[in-house]
Image 1 (cartoon, rainbow, N blue to C red):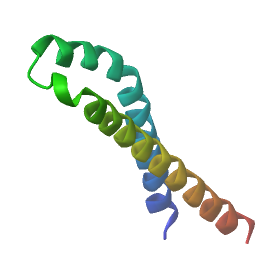
Image 2 (spheres, rainbow, N blue to C red):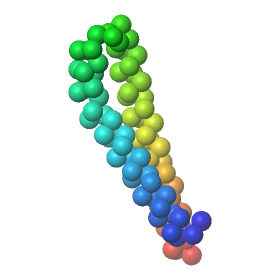
Image 3 (cartoon, rainbow, N blue to C red):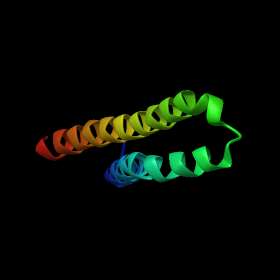
Image 4 (tube, rainbow, N blue to C red):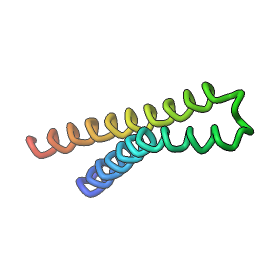
Amino acid sequence: MSDNKTIIQIVWGIVLSATGLGVFFAIPQKMIEIEKSGFFSSNLFFIKFSFYLIGILLLGGGIKKILKNCRNLHKKNSE
């Protein structure tokens, strides 16, 4: 990969990680809104689990992408 593509991938990883963190911070407020609606009250555990899983996947995928591309960039620069 060229240096520009690697940098774009690092930025994309940062965006994914930030989105994952945003999901974690938004879950408590969204759960209150869902509880108030009453429509999904029987599935609250599943909904909360799903939100946290999405947050973990976004955060983990972003960190993985950042680390992989930073290593590639460092390897290219050291050659």
